[in-house]
Every structure is written in structure tokens, then in C-alpha cells.
Image (cartoon, rainbow, N blue to C red; front, side, top):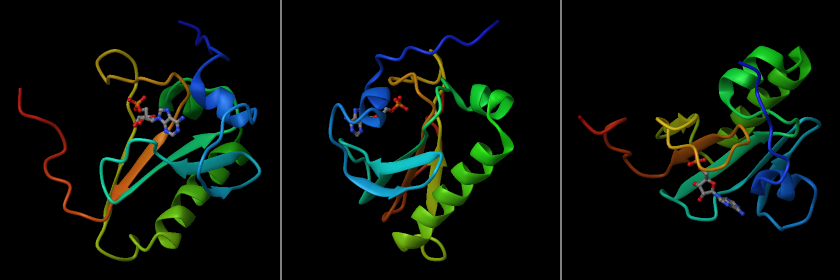
Length: 123
Ligand code: AMP
């Protein structure tokens, strides 16, 4: 099934400069900014600038340069915010209905600054 990207999603609006964000770090292909409803003392979203819906879409269709830039930027965010090396963090990406993805533009949540509990609730 082909991926369909919705250019009206809120992160696309942020990338176009139509709404503000609290930028942590920006690179050629990637933007990292603070989540508007933080779930931990550190809660940053890392997004590619390209139109990718999910992790699997990004991994399948992004260029090597975009993929490298994304991961290097995410790692730099962890270093800048003192969670790696440090007390640790969690990287989460939600996809689709079962993943409860709210914004259909690929994003990596980076959470830290407190113990984060179990990865998922037991069914
Ligand atoms: P997800 O459920 O994985 O799609 O997560 C979407 C995340 O985007 C949530 O944690 C929201 O709090 C966050 N979010 C939504 N709108 C904004 C915004 N304008 N600026 C920063 N974070 C946002």
C-alpha cells in the first residue's frame, strides 16, 4: 500500500513556519523541538523535514543523507539536554491506529529527566 502524506498536518505547518515552535536543534534535513504537552521534564520531538508519515515510511523511502542526519540530530539532542550520557531516556515513535499516532508526520519522541516506568501497559 502506498503512503499518503497529508500536508495540512500540524508538523507540516511548523516546517513551513506557519505556526511557532520551541526549537532545540535544526539541521539540513531535521528539526527538533519541545513537545507542547510534555510528558516528562525532557520531551522533545525530532522530525524529518521531508514528507514522511511514519517510521517505516521514512526508513523505506528517505535518502541515506536524510536518515543519517535524522539520527545524528536526535543523538545531538540527547547530548545537549544532558540525558546521554547520563541518566538515560526513552525514544518512542507511534504509527497508525494501534500506535495511537495523532500527527501523521513521522516523529521520534525523546523523553527523559525522570524514571519512565514500563514501556507499555499490560493488556
Ligand atoms: P503522537 O501521538 O505520537 O502523534 O504525538 C504527537 C505529539 O505532538 C503529542 O505529544 C503532542 O503533544 C505534540 N504536539 C501537537 N501539536 C504540537 C505543537 N504545535 N508543538 C509541539 N508539539 C505538538
